[in-house]
Length: 237
Image (tube, rainbow, N blue to C red; front, side, top):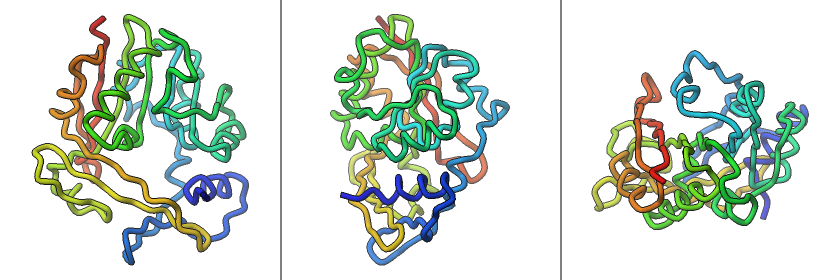
């Protein structure tokens, strides 16, 4: 099936845009600003990441490479994406080690203890779809990081009113959980729906139990991003 998100980023990078990338939920749409994915990472606004990350680093769902381009100047960084089109974007942008890989099947691609830290910024952890899926993802992440490993992941707080106002938000009767169902549309093509499970920080802490990780720190965004939070994880064993 076509991947409108990957196609839009690829066309933007190579000056071949064929229209507007849109977020769609039923008949409701919002235009996406593709250029935001290409903004340069500002370390002054991301000191939380510098505190918790070290190399070798695994950048999961690297997008257009804004974090990989910054961190590869400091230590070995491997960036992975689900699409060959996005891998092509990463390489053209100057990411030195960009690979196609499934972030939810990491032991199939990398050996045990391969990385010192991992980064998943872009709310990709929500694509794990369930509490059990999140536990399995964290377990896989523990497998590919060393005994002193760290990781930073992020998400939208389902209990925050800003999250509830999002185009694709759906409530859930279970405390600390909600979900999103989002489709991307580009150049007349509608992609497959993406199902995101939303977790509060407390639910992330709960899911981490028994995976080899503990939640070391949590930081919320500010301004229009005050519903977004980043979780720093560190290894227990």
